[in-house]
Each structure stands twice: as C-alpha cells, then as structure tokens.
Length: 266
Image 1 (cartoon, rainbow, N blue to C red):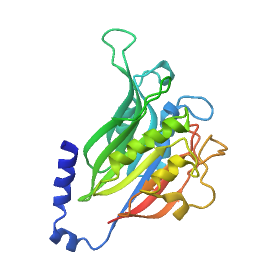
Image 2: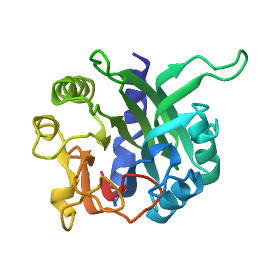
Image 3: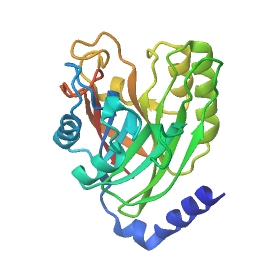
C-alpha cells in the first residue's frame, strides 16, 4: 500500500542520530470543528467567521466536517476547501463523502465531506467510506500523514452518522480496523454524534485516549451552539501524544463549537 510505504519512509527520516539530537518534544496545536457549511448560529453563510475561528485557535492542524465543494446554493457554489486553505495559508486535503453530478453539463461535481488543513507538509492521505445503512448519508474517515518537523503524525478526521447507534457502531468498528495498527502517533478527531458514555465512544477509547477528561475544565459541551447541551465533538490520541491543554472556544460561525487542544509529540 502506498500509504503504508510512505509511513515507513517518513519513519526512517528519524534516524538514531536525529533522535539523539531532538532534545525537546514538538508542541502541536490542533482543532476539530463541524462548520455547518459555513452557516452560523444566525443562519447566515459567512466562511470568514470560520477562518477567524481557526486563526484565533492558533491551530497548526485542523479537521473540519460538513464542508461543501461547489455543492449547493446554500454555500454559494463555493469551493470551500480551496477558499479556506488560501485564506489561512495552509496545506489541505478534502475528502468527498457525497459526490454528485453537476446540475448543468460542464460544471464541477457537487461534493460534501471532510477537510484537513495543515501548516506542516501533508505527505499522503486516503479517504475510506464507512458502513452505510439504507436511507442514511455516506460517511468517511479521512486519514492524513503529516510531517511534523520530521516526526510522522497520522491525523484522522471523521463525521459519524446521526441515524442510529447500530450504524454508528459499525462505522466505529471500521475506523478501529483502519487505525489500530498504525505505528506512528495518531490523532482521531471529529463529530462522532455520540456521547462519551455510548458504546461507540467507549469502543474508540479502548484504543485511543479522550483528551477532554485529561485536561478539560467543565463538561466540554459542543452542540448545539450557541448554548450546547451535548459533548459530541472529540479529539482522541495515541500514547505518543501527551495533551497539555484542551478547550471549547466560543464561536458563532457554526451550529457546533470547536474543540482546540495542544499536544506534546514525541
């Protein structure tokens, strides 16, 4: 597999001499945010508010959900991944979980899905479609391999179904199968549409650690904005990442609040 081969190549970059020279771990600031295609709590489309929320967080790696690419009039037919990447001066990978024909011949395909933005080089990526029940919406897992100062980081972004815990647990099991054997540091972020007490989240946290209980203050509620009642947006990490802080920034850019965190990567 190309993805696995590139992981191995990047790991080889960190030679014993390099490892000895690297005295301090790298601090990595991350953000996950369901942006509701740029529609804020006032119902108005304003992608600039999303960009400002990302900027204010100071994040160098970002996972976004509910991102449109020439999708619909609701987002003014904008290529939101390209717009955000240019506005924020970040590298990006977009994964289309919905991919529809244009309304007019010759127009771009209408796509909707997840987006990873990074100030570090994105070495490789892949999107895996997750189990789908009849009548539900296709979901996916976007994996990126990011070179963080010579240290590989697998950053994965997902948005799980709202249709029921049966479909969601199948999606979670698929994610575990895709990520559990990764040798490099792994961060899984996204809108899981499930509470921390659910079987779905408990399955994930047998493999990766939920950052909020470690470093968060309060309940970490994220949905619905502006007065959230549930914590359904997460950052889960592997043992190579040690969280130093996590928060839920205030934002009016979406119907969700983002989750920002800082990790020490070794």
